[in-house]
Image (cartoon, rainbow, N blue to C red; front, side):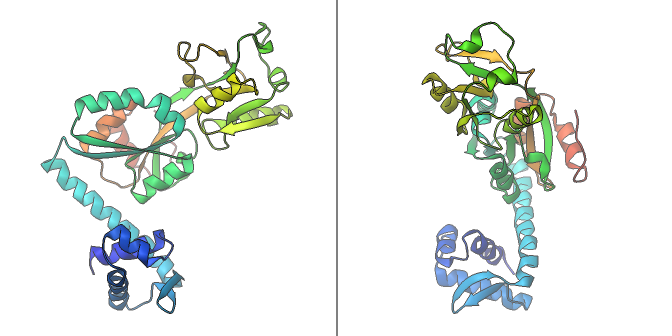
Length: 314
């Protein structure tokens, strides 16, 4: 049994059982991939894949049990490699961060700048996606750190740590009726077309919950992943925007106006997550503390020692 055999099985699943694609990923030949899988099956004494001729079509019943073990073995091997690098290349390497558009645009830049000044030889890779995609990138080992508002705490394979709280603002063009000085209410807001985040993004759950609880239907005309897109369409007069307060800057958004909406929607919590049981190099801990000063190394290590489902509060 060798790691190339294990990688061949893992990539076969990731590539939808297309061995030509697996060969490209592993920089080898399609017959070579087939041979690696067959040799592993012969050593284990079971078939991992259902076949139609020479094509793989699905996992066998025993394959569905063995593939997760293979995934964990490869993840442990990667952790072992990182542990060695910790002592041979302490200030160089790679840091992969998976996050949402809003966090990448508004929350991360300061931390990335400070980290790069301290670790110029560490290559930073930023991956953007939905909160669920962020979680999956962590679980698969594609990312070292995940940052998002929603979803991360729902995965037992992850340790999700609270970073900071934030609120929403309502964005309107100058001269809008909501700028008349009267208190902002859900009822007044619902009198206008609404532009806000896609479901699952940037506190959207709390926005929906507020209107649902009040029994108010809204005219949701546009949704988007990114606050800059939302602000663009607000500027065109297509509706009022509901965005994270951090996404509004008086100087940059001088053609728009922001109204504090913290009293309308529940406060949101940005979380940072790592995969449970993974080895984190020292500079990963340093980045985490740079992003959220309360998440010192001892705090993260203690949290990683908790069991799934444990509520973590700082």
